[in-house]
Amino acid sequence: MVQRLVDRRPQLRPDDLVAALVPPPRFDAVRFAGYLPDPAEPSQSAAVTALSAFADRVSATPGGAGRSGGGGRGGWSGLFGRGARGSRSGGASRGAGMARPGVYLDGGFGVGKTHLLASLWHAVAGPKAYGTFVELTSLVGALGFAATVRALSGMRLLAIDEFELDDPGDTVLMSTLLTRLADAGVALAATSNTQPEDLGVGRFAAADFLREIQGLAARFDVLRIDGTDYRHRGLPAPPSPCLDAEVAALAAAHEGASEDGFAALCAHLAGLHPSRYGALVDGVSLVAWHGVAPVADQAVALRVVMLADRLYDRSIPVVASGVPLGELFGAELLAGPHRKKYQRAVSRLAALARDGARLTAAA
Image (cartoon, rainbow, N blue to C red; front, top):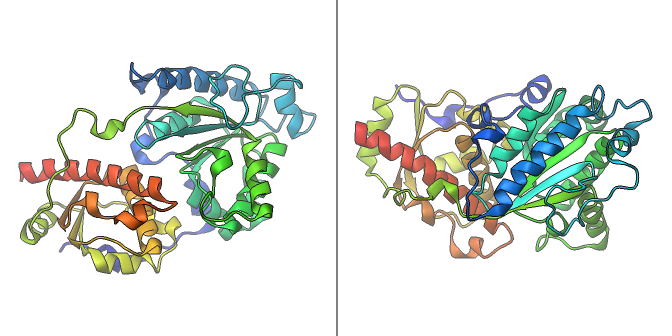
């Protein structure tokens, strides 16, 4: 019998959240050598060079970044020189003189930022941690702030994927957490589609929160990575939606597939914390959706974005009926402050739908 995601309610223990701070399956084996820079975009090869050097510097800190013997700050000042300065946080560094404790990979979706972040994590000697922004805020919620600082302050590197500030509470939380970790000597690396000083733009602009954002930006040197979306470079257009009967037949034919109505699944996501979305789809071989319809509500849309990220992390093919996945988010949402998130989700879902179409062709 085909399983339904709406029947799953995964539970995660705090220890599970800490143990899960590693790159997801899709990026488990990636390395710098496997990143293929676009020859037309020199920023991509420059990013590989800069991050490789950053990895060497972080790994060279004795016993972890915060174990220099003179306090956390001493690890970085001793490594880079107390007077060294990187690029301004709003500019595009190319790796020369990167002196701040963090490196921030900024660029459009589909340029390989997550590949590079995971490659950096693999290149740095442990102890180290890797998580999405949502996973880190969930860790704080599960362990408490002080325990999270203790759990992460012994790391050489904390890598944060999909960094974004969607509400003022997250702003203060992450600003304080990363400040404490940087002061403890932890090297920081993050990816985002948004420059650090522009985080939260269009969502909140109170002076207190702007100061928090500016404080975060000062922790990072920026590597700007330009280019087109590699997920669709030279590939055919995403497939058209399937018929409902085709979706049902594909789900029945693939062991480990799930089959759900799209509306019911969206309602189910509302009752799960996003930190559980990965566990929700763990072990699923194919996701089959009936009746995909445009999403108008922002809260629902952001949950779909996070589910799409977890499906992509796990390389789970998607087959669906209803509207094309490219029409999932309406014009009003795409004109709003989360536009880049929606575009990333569409890009990732289109790639997974292309994988699903190959299964359809083989059936």
